[in-house]
Length: 295
Ligand SMILES: Cc1cc2nc3c(=O)[nH]c(=O)nc-3n(C[C@H](O)[C@H](O)[C@H](O)COP(=O)(O)OP(=O)(O)OC[C@H]3O[C@@H](n4cnc5c(N)ncnc54)[C@H](O)[C@@H]3O)c2cc1C
Image (cartoon, rainbow, N blue to C red; front, side):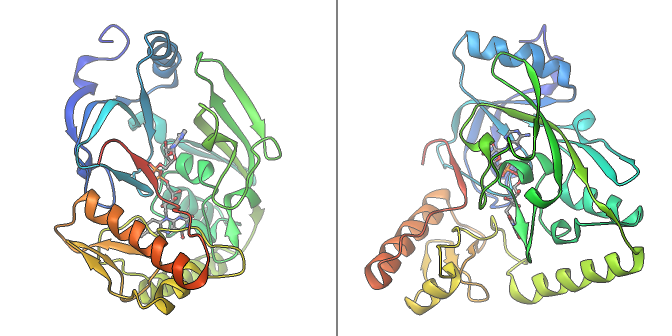
């Protein structure tokens, strides 16, 4: 591998709690910092050829890594994979760019459409994969096209329809594609108004979400016709705790790490919540969080 990637960017036994917003998780056997598309073009087919398992990491804000870690290679988009450029009403961003930075770039250029995303702590690559959304906005509304790489290192451009965006999902969740670059199509707007809307949403987040604790945002998808947080609260689970993991008092849809949680604590809270909500309301809660590794 050292012939494909400089040795100093190949790290071993890497604590994943340093790479996830939950701040839990054991070690990844190996983590490679990717700075150029060309590196992936060589590395990905090689890993597939030797049947080596790998995982693409964005900003780790929707991810729970098990306490026993991950016996595989984590590919983390870094450095050169974070550029953003603007051309008229189009923004082109490399997949590793933070969604919040892309949203601020849009604001600075007087482009509207991405206000909803300013407070989502993921990378834009992760945001596209998950079709991240909030306050009536979602990535589907602003994505024009997505450049992806398949497991053979071949590059293709997928348009919005081909992305099969759905509620917190896209075609990438079921296919071994790596998102490399995204083109967003926004509209001209008023910089002051865009800024005011972002501040309003940020205020809403601060007042309603337990941002002072480590978490991965909403733990569950919204079941059709219900709100996960309300079902959890009505099941009497506000503040429900196992070890250091807790259903947030402030927003029952969030499971927080109160400081000393293990990944197993968090997973147990998730499972207990699912069981009790099912028992009480006959509704199945599906985790929004992605699970990785051994618990
Ligand atoms: C406080 C807080 C608030 C949040 N609020 C919201 C919200 O309002 N709305 C919302 O939708 N989400 C929210 N989230 C969840 C999370 O931020 C989003 O799901 C985000 O889009 C995940 O991006 P990420 O880069 O962190 O992805 P990661 O957690 O790193 O990865 C998530 C999945 O995407 C895959 N992936 C990531 N990058 C790529 C890539 N380049 N190519 C292929 N696959 C890739 C990973 O393999 C994994 O399967 C919140 C999280 C927190 C902690």
